[in-house]
Image 1 (cartoon, rainbow, N blue to C red):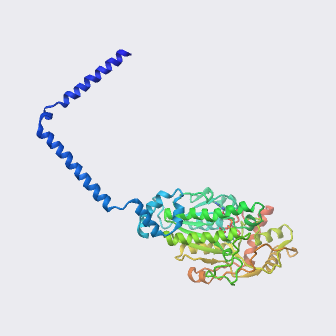
Image 2 (image 1 turned 90 degrees about the horizontal axis):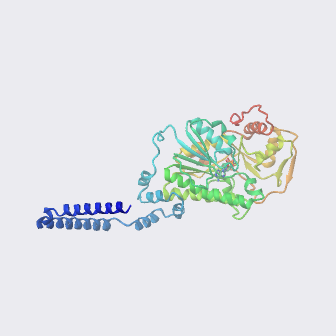
Image 3 (image 1 turned 45 degrees about the vertical axis):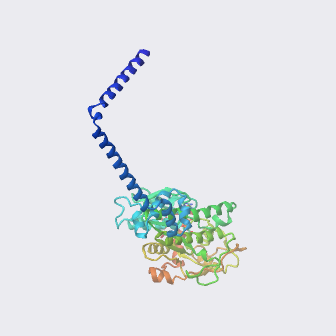
Length: 446
Ligand SMILES: NC(=O)c1ccc[n+]([C@@H]2O[C@H](COP(=O)([O-])OP(=O)(O)OC[C@H]3O[C@@H](n4cnc5c(N)ncnc54)[C@H](O)[C@@H]3O)[C@@H](O)[C@H]2O)c1
């Protein structure tokens, strides 16, 4: 071993000697070459110093870019968003000085997705009641549809008939977590919409916390996604933003009368915040935004027993239970069939107007009148039972839809007496397995 080391050392010495020998070439002894070499080095050094001086003098530092950006966007939202994993892309985008440049900086869609015919559409909450009907229409139109849903109130059964279709993808995902998907349009529906899930639940604080998170963090995440990929974003807001209205019917210009600390406020205020976020992103970051204020909607695939009045009455009448009316039953609501709503949402998304737009049926019914229609449709002998009214229950609701009529060319076509039997067929089948007049997906009933 030691001999091997000695041998190696000897070899190294020899090679070092060789190097020394080779460096002691005749050139080294030539003074003009050495001087030229030093002069060359010095020239390159000076050129390098000059270039870096010019560069750092004229190009602003990253700190000043970032402060300009804050002035341009003037939005604390962007700062909030920066804490999300989208930070790098957002800062890169923020260097753009105009919206046009900003658009160019967005992540391009993958090859093959830019076709005008086939849009790639994300529907959050697409396994829910409204979302699943929207998905049906988008698939029918030939779009490529991605649904994300955490199944809090939605069901896989609502979209199961699309599984296997190459144009359809279903992802279990909670919108409070960020996600990156390359899409052209985002319909943001994810939010538990029925009162039992935000009002009467024994763990309502947890539910209301969940609601706030969904409405605030979830909406922020989806707006962030829209910004990154340059997608158009549609928010499904609600007539609840009008609270217990002092103006009747309610036009979009009305700012509402909401109790900010009541039992319904986690939903009402959550949606109001979501609208604010959408508008701030529109104004501050140039996102193409659409806002729909949806009034009471009913139809097949609604959750059974979810506390919404139409589904409550229909399920109760089918089970031969009394119809529960809260308060004196004189409070009014307007009821829109789900296919009308879906038509309105799609027109809004495709149109050029931001909104907000009321989407609802202006036909106004008291709760007692609704109970009567349910009796006529299902069971004339169904009893009515009165219960004490719930806190902050609005006295009246009726949309003014002039704006949607004029700018979207939209108005509802299905009356309550036409729509209710279609819902009853679906409910009967789900409650009793009676397949008369409806398929499993509820699609035939719409
Ligand atoms: N149906 C109505 O009468 C009505 C009225 C006004 C507004 N809206 C709005 O329309 C949208 C759809 O309502 P709907 O009636 O279909 O309600 P729904 O409860 O049937 O659907 C909501 C869907 O969102 C999903 N979801 C909830 N939180 C989520 C989360 N954090 N991440 C991912 N998915 C989540 C649920 O699982 C469900 O599938 C909601 O935003 C609601 O506020 C509905």
